[in-house]
Image: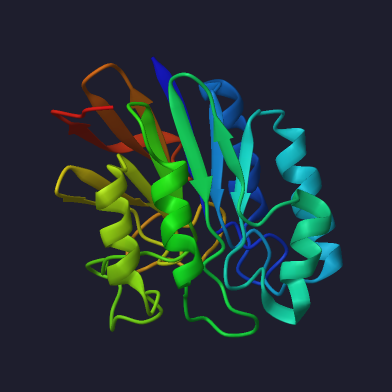
Length: 244
């Protein structure tokens, strides 16, 4: 079994940041002992260097490797996309072994909330995410609308082409954040999984701070939505007929 923690929208140091939830998140992740930690952006609130310093300390202190991170729209503010590279390296991180492959994409544009992938990356998706391994694409912006999040905004302007590239490559999972509400769509056998905000008061309605735990076996997968405040599993999805 492979266990993947999917965390998003920490907004560390921002005015909506909740320190006690960050402490809970740390303990929950240490207890879960995931094989991978994927962070889909908005680790900072304004992209400043001091925010990145604190975010880097927090994430490195978890001691979960591989640690795979892409920037969010908040991280790209104030030239934060350049600061991201100093602290976390490539904005298009990859990881692969004999069982699975991950490709991260920077879907942000400086100082605006809108998302964009770019034509130059469509072939990258098809080339990197090929073969019979379990295939993951991760980015900050959601590619499909999320119910319960109000008027739709900020889906990447080229989301349709990105989804087409994912389906052509046979991607198994597309992981994203941005909307602060967990959700799962299944489209032609690909699961589009959005994580909520883990450590921020920027919640939708009566929702709760959360992150995702994804358990993979040969032909099935299980997704657990973890409530960071109550420190419990709130929802479990059994993703049947999963084919890696």
